[in-house]
Image 1 (cartoon, rainbow, N blue to C red):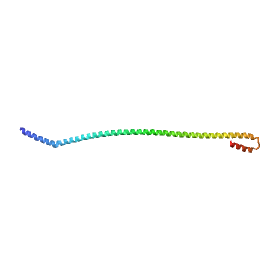
Image 2: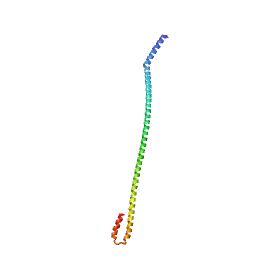
Image 3: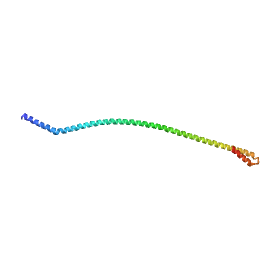
Image 4: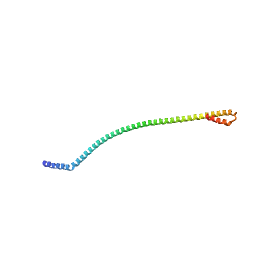
Length: 156
C-alpha cells in the first residue's frame, strides 16, 4: 500500500463527500435553519406586538374606568339636583294645598257666620213679631198691623 495513493483516494473521496453534502445535505439544513430563524424572529415580533397591545389595553381600561367614575359622579350630582327639585316642588304643592285649604276654611267660616246672623236676625224678627202680635191683639185692624209687622221684619 502506497500512502500517496491512499491519501489521494481519501482526498478524492473527501472532495466527493463535501460536494455531495454541499449539493444535497447543506441546502435543506440551511433552509431549516433559515425557517427556524424566521420563526423565532416572527415570535419575538409577535411578543413585542402583544406587549404593546397589552400596554395599550391597560391604558384604555384605565381611561374607561376614569370616564365611568366621572359619569357616575355626574349621575349622582344630577340625581341630587333632581331630588332637591322634587322636594322643592313638593313643598310648593303642599304650600298651595295649605293655602287652598285655609281659603276654603275661611269661606266656610264666613258662610257659617252669615247663616248664624241670618238665623239670629230671623229669631229677633220672630220675637219682635210675637211681641208686636201680643200688643196688637188688643187693637182691631189686624191687616194694617200685619203689613207693619212685615215691614219691621224685613228691616231687621
